[in-house]
Image 1 (cartoon, protein in one colour):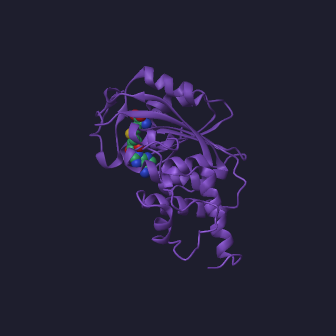
Image 2 (cartoon, helix red, strand yellow):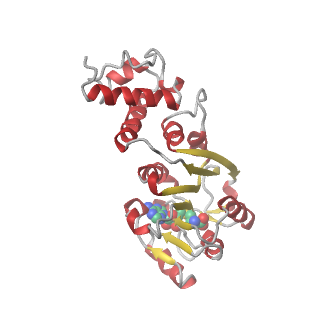
Image 3 (cartoon, protein in one colour):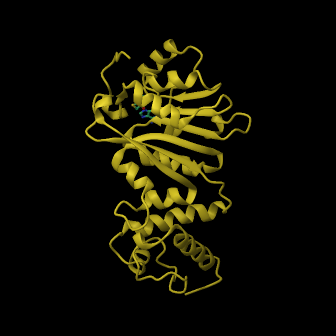
Length: 266
Ligand code: SAH
């Protein structure tokens, strides 16, 4: 792969240049001909090249105009959207009611917004396979009781099953990032909860972990939920967010919904 332009830091450009790692990533994605695959940030197309031969429905989304031009030349038949993935309208990506598989060596500076965008659209999602910064991969896949357990882990556990597949050295990229990377695989669950509950769940998790050191009683009363009395929610409010399981957060969420609908008042 030849790099024509100066890599742009603002777009998180670190191009992958290792055939072995690329093959390992493709093995994890395991693309099937009928899959609908969305690649975020194809860059010069090192992963695109491998995916294009194994699936009929590949859509690549690249923000950088210069890269988009070179991708068009290299892959004339590739369906390419030259835009910011964070602005992409998911209804545009729909094909024959197929669920989306979203993959990529994504720009590390927008990992969280990308994840939350997929979560918002979870009904349309099958899975996601991403290269992210190793620290973030750990936070995405952490279990309760570990120091990495926080907003990302809890929210992802509610919506999906996650796996940290393998670590990736900075040496396989150009330019070399300062950090290790890792591949993560997110398999979205069939979510049957109402959307109101999903949104509130995320807000509760953010409110309690926003004050990670505080016990729940204090973090909740310092948050947008300060008007809700959680004392008879069934959760011990002298615990901290990091002690709670996903089910515990669901209990808090349902309590908040009941309380707001006037069933229990302070
Ligand atoms: N997949 C390529 C490039 C990875 S670098 C490889 O592995 O070699 C990250 C890529 O994401 C770059 O091509 C960058 O231009 C692109 N990018 C950055 N922000 C983006 C955004 N908001 N939407 C779509 N693509 C973006």
